[in-house]
Every structure is written in structure tokens, then in C-alpha cells.
Picture 1: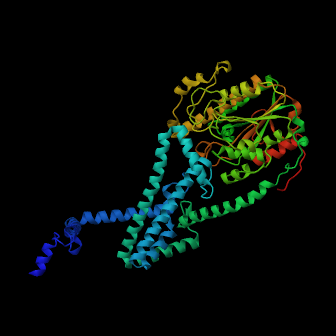
Picture 2: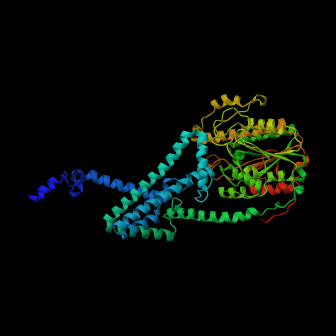
Picture 3: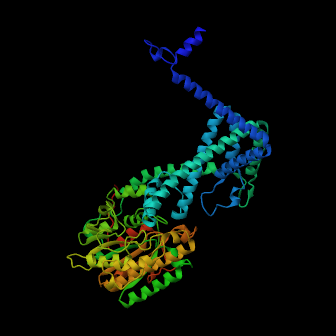
Length: 599
């Protein structure tokens, strides 16, 4: 038995012999472990087969349920709409072409390529589901679909908004949850696609017949244009959605190149300083944006009554103080958010409706309306931005000699959700630190109010102007206000609180003007965009109100040809201009002479 003896002794090296000269003991144990694992796997498989044998009905029910769930997931992903209003059961009563094509491809492939195709199909469904969910969110908040070429830059802003509104913990949890959701969708879709591919291959004959019938039905319904519940029976929703996103991306990249050239041309680019704004010399001009002040605030039955009363009251109070006003409409370049796009569009005379355009134009030297005042040398120019809490390089592009951000206004009170301070306080600080001071030149001010920023909870209330102090007076008001989380989840409450926030901002502004305005004050105030679609409605316009207020009748005489409505409330039939038209119309109305530059 020499062989057995040698193997037996090899488990421990003898003198003069290394362990490498014979099989070590750990190899024997590894082999034993592998045999045990193999035996365990075989046992588990055997138990599974035994369970199926002992409970055939339960096993078959589980098999059918799993397969049916996989089919529902795949068909659901292929037919999923990209807007919340369209998310109805009838939207899924369709025959998706992508499912028929997928079945045909799977049936034609051998095992390994079939598995690879199923995994890729599952990942494609993941991408489709992700962009559809992003579309839902963007349509709900910004009134447009997601743009893969432009909108990734907005995701950090969205997280910052959640952090400011609901707290850092919620923002972190939301970000982590979003990532986990995508990973979960990927795992589930891949598993569903693999499951269906396996079932189709196992029942190839019946699956082939079914795919042929489904394909024939789809072609027939498509050729005849048959519809069901208001939509085509033959659907290519999945491929169509991805095609739209691909086209949107390509068009955005082309648009960026064209916009670079467009931004270099300027009607007033070469106008000498002495020929700019000659009819406003000596006036203190204030441009003020009211956050989310849209047409819906004035015309929607849910918000309009309170806002209209505020505008009527403000008009009468200003008339009593010697002011007159004219109002019209501007169609904003943005909707539901991204306020800086509305600001920059109004001031530059360029249509800036995405972040790429914004970065392009603010990196150049295109003349803004505010910078035109600086260019004349006849005004001091300042910005009052209570919403700015970090470096803001756009200050130079806007032509501002001095910027007062959230930390420069002396506020020591509480934040109101996203808004760092109430509008009434910001305006009083503006008066104390800027507008009320003596100076050698008149003042051009660029003021951004923030109290009407979503989620409209908690909201500040008006207090006595002499009681504002450092803002500590708002502590009790903030504590007694609604919680942001309660308002965000309630559409009716959001609409109600939105209307109240606009009333507060407009009251703050009109009372400030009544209190501190002079014979030389010219106030231009407008909205930056409509509120989110959940508040303004899915079919709301992008229009925002705009008003010019002054004591000097000569100022309003210059815009008499605009045919705007008298007072602070624009009429339904008042002219509507695109927001990018305002800069040139304003410059021309107040004595500026065009001298174009071509870049």
C-alpha cells in the first residue's frame, strides 16, 4: 500500500522535506469544504424539488405570481407616463411595441446571449423609468420635462432647497433615498427581464405564437389608428420617450453654440454713456423682483380675491401719497423655480431659459439694464439680495457697485423656511443702510424679495415699521406659523398659503414706498415666474405682472404708448410681452439711443 502510505504521511512534512513537496493538510480541508458546500447546495436543491413535489399547487401559484409580477413591471415601465396627471390606469391599457420586439429577440437568441440581452433590456427599462420619474418631478415643479444636457446642475440646488426648507437630515435622507431607489429599480427591472426571458425560452412554441399574434395586432391597430381611452392602442411610449430625450439633448447642445453668437450681438452694446437713460437722470430707480408673483395670483379664484384686495388697497394708498402706477404682463423665461433665469432675462434682453445659457451670458459682457445705469456714471448702483448666502460673481455682470447679501443687512431674527428674512425687514434695512442715506448721485437699486418663496410656511406677518429692530420681533411669529412639511404635502393648503405670501410681499413693498418714497423715486416691480404647477395649475401661462410706479407724471408719460393698465393690477387684456423684450423697450422709452454691437 505504498501510495496510501505516502498520501497519509504527506499531511505533515517530514524532516528535510518542505511542505511544497507534498499536498498540505489545508488543501485536503479545502477539498472537504468544497465537497460539503456542494453537498449542501445539492441538499438545498433537493429540498426545493421535494417542496415542489409535495406542494405542486403552491409551487405553481408562486411561479405564476412571480412571472405575472415580472410582466406587470416590464409593461408598466414601458407604458409609464411622464406627468402626474396622466398617471391613470387607462394609460396602461396599451400594447407596447417594445415588449413585442423584446420577446422576438429573446426567442431568437441562444442561452448566454439571451441572458445578456435580458440584462441590457432591464437596464434600458431602468433608464426609461428614471427619466419618466424625473419628467414628473420637473413638470410638477418647473412646468417642463427633464433635460439631460442641462438639468443635472439643478440637482444640487434642489438638495440645498430641501435642506433649507426641511433640514439637513431630510435633505441627506432624500439624496440617499433617490440613489437607493434607482439601484432598486435597476435590480428589480433586470430580475423581471431575466425572469420573462427564461419563461419565454422554456415555452418557446407557445411564446412564438403569442409574439406573432401580439405583433400582428399591434401592426393592425397602428395601421387603423385605433384608440382606447383617448390614446392609441398600439403604443411605442418607451422608445418615443427615449427618442424625445435624445432629441432634447442634441437640440440643447446645438442651442448652446447658437446662443454664444446671439449673446455677442447687442442693440445698445456700443451706445455711449451720455446717450443712455437720459430721461431718468436725477431719479432714484428701484428694480424689485417679487418671488413667484405670477398671473395665477391675480386671476386664479383660489388666490385672486386676497391678492386683488391687496393690490387695490395698495393702489389707493399710493395714490393718496401722490404716486401713480401702470401695469402689464411679461411672459417669463422660467416657471416654478430657477428665479435667476427670470432676473437675467429681464435685465439682459436675452431669452435665458436654462442654466447653460445663464452661465454663458453671465461669463460675458452683454449689457444688462442695471449695468446701463452704472455705465452712465450718473448713478450709484447697489444690489439687495437677502437670498444670497455665498459668493455671487454675477454682481459684476449686473453692474453693481455694492452688494448687500443675507449677512450684510443686520438681521438677527429667525429664518422663514428658505427665506432668510421677511421682506418687510429687508426693505427697512435697505432704507436704513442704502436708500435713506445722503449721497452725491441718485441711486439705482436691484432688490430681490424672498418671502413668497415656496414652500410658503411658516409665513411672516406685518409688524409696526418702528418695531422691526434687528428682526428678533419675528421669533414668536415664526414659531406660531405652519410647518413646511404640512404645507408641502397639501395642495389646497399650498395654494392658500401661496396667496397669503404674495399679499405679504406686496403689502411690504407698497407700504415701504408709501413711507419712504420721494418725488424722485421710480419703482419697477415684477414677478420672476409663476408658482409651481401644483399651485398655479397644469395649464397655467408663464405670465407675470409688472408695474411702474412714480410721482413724477413725466415718467409715466414716457410709457403711455405701452397701453398698460392704470394701477397696480394689470387688466386681463393688458399687453403681454416676452420678458426679454423689456430691457430694450425700457431703454428706448427713457431716452437711450441704439448703437448695436455685433460681437
